[in-house]
Image 1 (cartoon, helix red, strand yellow):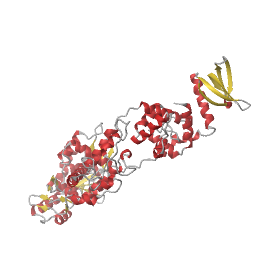
Image 2: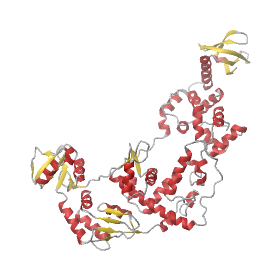
Image 3: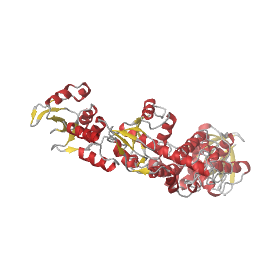
Image 4: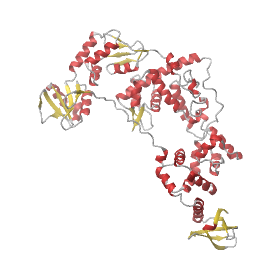
Length: 585
C-alpha cells in the first residue's frame, strides 16, 4: 500500500457524506464494530490487500474489464463504472486504480468466462407455441405444488437442518402429502417461497407469513404473478438490464468472473425462474414474460389464457366424497380442505369427508349450519343425505367438552358428561396438562369441571389433538374461534446502512478536526519511528526553500523528529511543523 494512496483516500473519505460512507462500508463487508478511530484507519484497512481482494470478487465482468484497462495501460475508468468503483473505494476520483487495487487484480484468477454478447431474451423460437404450452403447464403445476407446500407448513412448520436445507422428515411429509414429486422439487419450491416472502425462518423453523396466507386465498394467476414479480425483482444486478429485465441466461455464469461462488448462485436464480415458468427450459422468455425480460411488464393475461379454467362447483357424492370437475378456485379449495381430506390432486381433484375432518372443521369454528350452507352452495348435486347425516352427527357430539379461562386465567374444562371428564382426566396423552377436579367448584351447575395450570389455548389444542369433541369458550361461556395457524412474525424492515454504522461514523467524524494532511504526516512518522525505517524527509527552511534529509527515524516527541542522518552520520532533530513530506529512502 502506497502511503500517498492511503493519504489521498483518507481525504476522499473525509469528504464523503455519512450515507456514502455507510454504503461503502456495507459494500465492502466492513463490520460495524471495526476499531477505527479516524479516516486514516479506514483508508489503511480499505487498501489492505485482503480487503481489496475480497472486493475484487464482487466485480462484474464490465467493471473488471474497465479496471483491467486502467491497470494495464493507465486508461482511466470512465462513465457509470467509474462512479461504482469509486463508491467502493477501488479507484481514485480521477478513475485511476490504487496501487493496492492493481496488485490485487493482477493476482486474481478468473473463475468464469467473460460475458459474451447477449441475445435478445424476448426473441421467439420456431416452436414458441409448443414451448409456451409446456411452460404454462409448468407454471400451473408449480403454483399448485407451492400452495400444497404452504398448506403443509400451516399444519406444522417445516424444519431445516444445519446445512440450511429441508430435513428428511419434512421432505417425506411433503412427498406423502402429494405436494411434490421429489426432494429437489421440495427444496426449489421452499427457496422460491422464501424469496417471495411467503415463508420465513424463525430459528430452524420455516413458517408461513401473513403474505403467504393471503397468497393462498388468491386466484391461480394472481398467485403466479405475485411470485414471478418477486423473482424478477431479485434478478442480480450483474445480469440485469439496468434495474429491469435480464440478459441472456447462458451468459450469467460469467457475470462475476472473480467470484468462485457466483456460478452456483447464478444457477440457483436461473433454476427458480425456470421452475416458475418465467423462462423456458432453454433460457428464452415465454410470451408472457418476453416484455419483462427486456425491462417491461409481465403479460399475465397471456398465461391466464393457457391455464386450465377454474371451477366454482363440485359434485358431492353419497360415498362422502367431492369431485371437482376442474381446477377448483383456490379460496373454495382452501375452505373445502378445512372440512375434507384431499385424496388426489389434478385438474380434477377429489376430497373425502370423514368424522375426523368434520370434527376438525367444527373445532376450527364451523357449525352444522355453516357447513351445510357452504356445501349446498358449492354442490352441483345438492347435499347428499349420508353427508348431511354425518354433519349432524358430528355436530351433535361436538362441544361435549368446553375449555375456557378460570378466574386466574388458567384453563378450566367443563362438561355435562361426568364420564367424559373422568376419561380425559386419566388419558395419558393429556397427562402433561395435569388435569385435576376444580377444588373450588367440584360440581359445576351443569356437570363437573377440571382445571389445569396451562393456558386455555394450550389445553384446547391438546384435547382437540386427542380427538375429543371440544370447543373453546370465553369467560362468559360463549363459544370463540381459535386459529391454530402459527404465522411468521412480520419481518422488520432492514435498518438503513447509515443506522447500522452510526457508531463507527461518529468516531470518524469526531477525528476530523484539524489539518488532515498534518494528521496523516504524523501517522506516517509514527510508523517510521516504530519500524526504525530509513526515510527521506523534505523540510521547509526559513527562507522558503526545501531540503531533503535521509535519516533513520529513531524518535518522535515534543513536536520534533529525531533520526540518524546516514549521509553525514550525525543525529538530527527536525521540527515536525517544518516537514512537508516524507518518502521511502
